[in-house]
Length: 462
Image 1 (tube, rainbow, N blue to C red):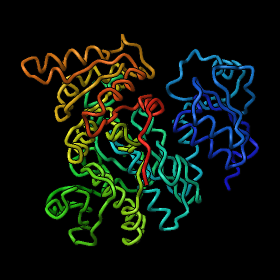
Image 2 (cartoon, rainbow, N blue to C red; image 1 turned 30 degrees about the vertical axis):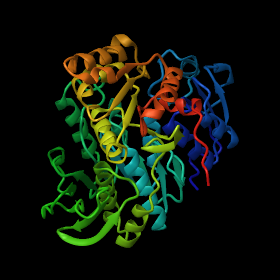
Image 3 (cartoon, rainbow, N blue to C red; image 1 turned 90 degrees about the vertical axis):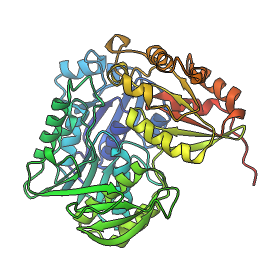
Image 4 (tube, one colour; image 1 turned 135 degrees about the horizontal axis):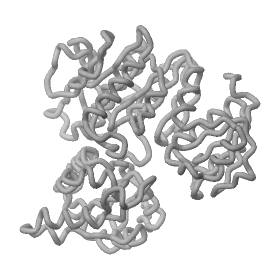
């Protein structure tokens, strides 16, 4: 057990967040006395309470008694607890800074970066390392089915997501840096593509001497290191790629079976439980990292084929009047297209409810948002989840709705677009329209998940 945090008093501001809650759990494991606050009550706070962590809702500096304070990157700089800590001389760490400190306590660090797929790839690696009985700890940006957002099985490896938001991933010094893809997703942080790629170049340059950069083929330009491992997902083998997934589309109509080539040699076939080209892409990335860590092919194959997934990643919650209700974290046009593509293959009559996430993202990617829902039979747009922003930082859901109408003004599909007033309105919309559809795909990274608690799901008949 790590003793550098033992007997320390650590306070987390924003402890209900997926990353900070995992770090708080890890500190409890290390013997620290942990407290935390969050803006809203949630099931995650209840979970932390059950672990013996003192938590409260709202900002109450009078409750804070800590050797140091860790705060979420989304926190307002005028937060009362944060100001109290600073004015009292208590050391404070932003989430990514503390993550960097924590990572230094492990033998090797594996950091997974990329615009899309970080959580699923990290979760897949967690499953692989567990099957291989490696001594590792995984810090995951989602709740992995069968695990959690934190898995502690040793300190030889630390597996973590590495987020580009505000260049947070630069706090890490990985032994293996993974780059899944690079696409604009945080226009509030990066003004152009050059700034974004420069940040990823800095991330991979942080790799320790004799480390590895595992990068998707096509993005090698960000790497100046000679220790580059490439992976790809294509329809035919490419010998210059280190690891490659070759889809067996002709043999498996669901598209979740693929052959794996290592340096041009066929070494196994894998069939995932989850569909979608993006899941194969994540799987071959995880496969590549695992092989570079010396894990046997059979262990990797077993783990990936039995991988159950991550909550809110195409998660089926039940049915309403026979229509499946599926929640997916997709909030970027590329992710939305991928999610709709998977659903479209399964459900002939597909409805989508979408909650835009941040005003700046909606404004920056507005043309792509207008076209990415084209394969849905019905679209309902919920109010924007603001997160850390104000509407003046970009554009809201009503603007997106108007652009959707204008983009299809000469088409009959305009009647299929709807602008909703809130989550309760969304739940009522589903109840009203469910009889006409096979599936409602609920897309967004905000609190759209709360609609699930407002629905009366069909009873399962054995």
